[in-house]
Image 1 (cartoon, rainbow, N blue to C red):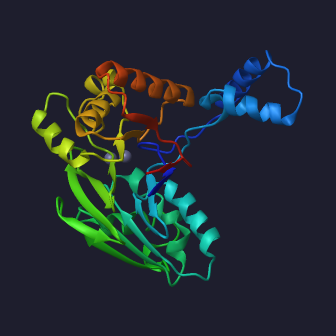
Image 2: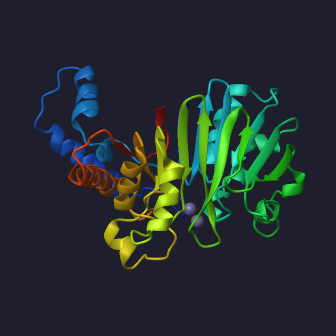
Length: 318
Ligand SMILES: [Zn+2]
Ligand SMILES: [Zn+2]
């Protein structure tokens, strides 16, 4: 399977401002000043190999949207603002005359997880079929209200696509476009649902907007089973341990520390930190990843767990 991250920010899109770009340029020039470049390929090599990620790139601005693909079959997790970029890509790839089918799993109906839908170009095209799956009863209402007067100029009822909503029962396993999908209830204001997605021998778990509390062993046990031997666990790690246990306790998100603990207990191969804090700069997110990797090596001598942090545009092969 291939997992393509189209939106990775938590809560709200987070744009870069001019000061942030200047900070990146200055850092790059300071590092470059010690070098002599004799060719353009020297410059490319310098950028690729010597600049830290935060100085040459960005984790991105879009809210949650992840595509899980196996050959021509794919499903999407959440319809945050990243769905807009995915839709534009789909139109470029399939062309306007090729009706196609989309399957979207929705974790919950908070705005950052559905706000991309009014900008999803295939939804405007006749002949497109879109099926939205989730465990919340009011999915249709949320999608239609966000796309109604006075919030949006084009009413939901005027969309060209045929759109269906299918309510899933947590802990039941479904076949969705050739993927085995099981939803699990998570601790979040208004509830959210994680998805365990299996194809052949491969397992991806998409678990965002989920608050795990270190002291709750019963809760941890259920989730260790849900995450068991996942090849990739996409995990809500919006906060640091310090924030999660003090000012941001009960806000509905988890920290990197408990992500590492649960992933190690469940025998996960690759933990991907997700739902990045919108207030974190690229430099902070680079450091957050390094701190998390250091922490994992302190918790156990077993270094099998790979840890990364999601960014818009990233693709992970599973
Ligand atoms: Zn969210
Ligand atoms: Zn939420």
